[in-house]
Image (cartoon, rainbow, N blue to C red; front, side, top):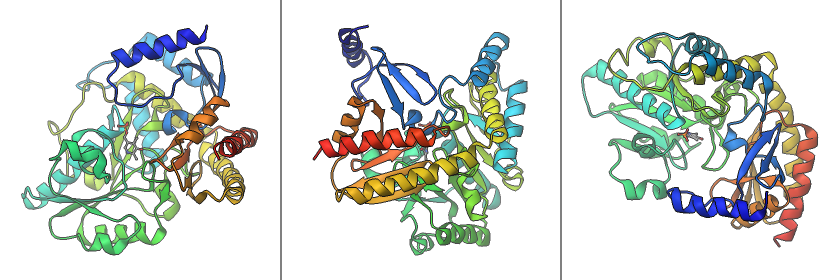
Length: 401
Ligand SMILES: *Cc1c(COP(=O)(O)O)cnc(C)c1O
């Protein structure tokens, strides 16, 4: 196919699709392993994985065969009936996360919505009041629906859509005193990402996350950890909170849970499960359908069987070493943050020109904010892939001087 064909698709897309993204000027057509191919057949090394989604790499035969088999068997039924893949996916997710109860959603934002409803109901059942408050974090990202947006600590995303849901307060991430200052008798939940993704690849400090756990224990406040981006093996642990030896009351996951099919979940402890949402309180038509759950069950099986989190930890350490070398070479790189296969380089200028240069050279990267390059590759990348990525990255930075 020719350049003109790709350009024609792009022009048509710009006429037909609502312009809510400034898209890179390529049409992606297929994937294989850690590579993507555009309509012209040009190969790209993928260090984005659909933003931390395609953990297992493209074209995993076992995963694809599972989906094909489920398509021929049963794609959808209603949540008014049981289905086998949902039971298997819930069992596997409980084992992987250590949580007790699971509700499957269609997306990350919906998992956040469910977590917020859980917290409000839990508090309502205790005191019958309807003025409960939720503490969220500045620079957080929790999704684009009205509830998830209301707890997203980026005023720019929220402004035009105010008022959001009420009684949300924002504290500073990794500043325990700023959280303590907001806690009162109305507080029903403290919500944070274990590693902030969109907001800048910042892991929680041990003092911060354990301090929040303590506050929540003392006051019977629900600790909600959003691991939609940092969970599912990416930080070297099945879920990032496991590194700290703590456990949330409510956990959200999505992105890599389905590795490409739309599925998320909010999970909770048995204690919260027994004292929050009941029949009639929450529902979804698609959530937990057999097709998406078959995918999630298979992803979880492969993650556990093949020790994907441990492999991500090893690859993540190598990526860290290599990006430290890159940082040492270029004074315009101010900081290197993150953990596991979730890292970022903070520049003293906008990074999109570098990302576009890399794209020309066959490397897919993405930003987090305007001045950070984010690295969230498939969890199956090798040292060779990382070496090739760094070679292209370095030449893209050099040419952008
Ligand atoms: C992507 C993301 C979300 C939103 O997930 P969607 O599936 O896009 O709705 C929420 N929280 C975090 C931390 C995310 O990275």
